[in-house]
Image (cartoon, rainbow, N blue to C red; front, side, top):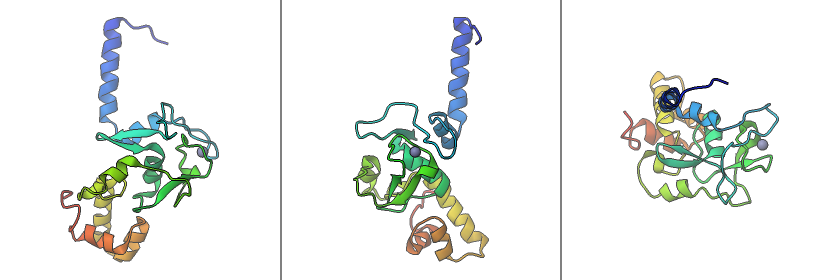
Length: 175
Ligand SMILES: [Zn+2]
């Protein structure tokens, strides 16, 4: 424990804020999760909404933390699919405890749903990982050696959707 003067302490806080801002979304995300062994629950450290789920802000958009976690490991969440907990612990962000499915319980991701009608990029019902994933899809297509169907499978999306991304019919705002 270091004792700091108020001035040092303010400087430290400013440094931390600067560092935090310079982090990637992924690095920031894991700061808020208590990561433990692979077979244990990794709980969100902060408050959860009345629906029991934790949310994480990405560029001003609130994303359900477990959805974010799943996407970090697996990529885009296909439209109308849900990310379910094997452990029934809504605060848990351990990717090993999450699976893609159609849960019987109605997991409402109000944000994603609310954005679904807005016709650009990440707002089309897919997860936010968006920009990066779109770039990856285009890179893969450019590199060749894979069919669009294979690329689509890799990201859990429909071939038609991959085709639209690759041909830049959608996600035009990503170079
Ligand atoms: Zn868990």
